[in-house]
Length: 292
Image (cartoon, rainbow, N blue to C red; front, side, top):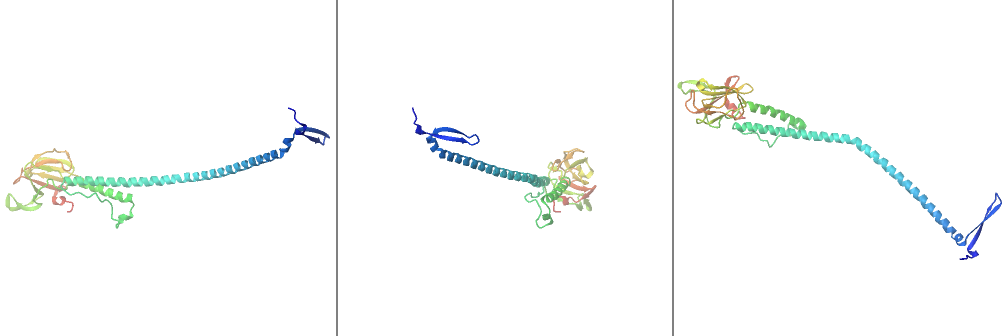
């Protein structure tokens, strides 16, 4: 297709240094659109510059936020060991207090078991702790529970190895002390123990943990058992029809060690029971309950 000459325009470029000219022919329509091209290029440049400025600004903000977060993390790391230590201490205190309470409850249950075997009423385990109006209120929980735990340990040891309660649950027919001699009404005699009513063959229970010291015939006591306990205590069980234990044998509170009888110097079936301290008879009535 032949183009018309009017569709082209000639642009002359003059080189002043060389005094030369150069002619360029381009379509006329492109010259008319040149200002649009220039405007588009300028807009594009402005858009690129704006984008670059915006991205630089966002990068600066992100860097600032990053630095702030790093600072906060460093602060939290510094506080973490303290918080962990405080938490560990609180947990340890709670566990210690809880273990003390469980230990106290366990000791009370053991004490109650000893007392029940002796025919005595046990302690209540529903309320453990001090009175807020007393000096114990000034102690920490650990100090308070530690004191109670120590006290109950000593109490448990005393209850376990001190003769307490009844060797058999029955009526008392003769008390400790001087009385009329049943075999010679004209004279008085010291009765070194207490007598419990019973029928031949009724079980006889040891009243504290210990070791059998003597078994066999012992004069007026007839068939007799003597048990050695801690704290220089002994208990004696006389007039037995049968002996269930041997010398040197360990016995526990409530064990059946013999049977009621009427052997020796006796007017009928009953149990003669003595408590001795350092070998001397003391009134067993003091050991039958916790209130004496």
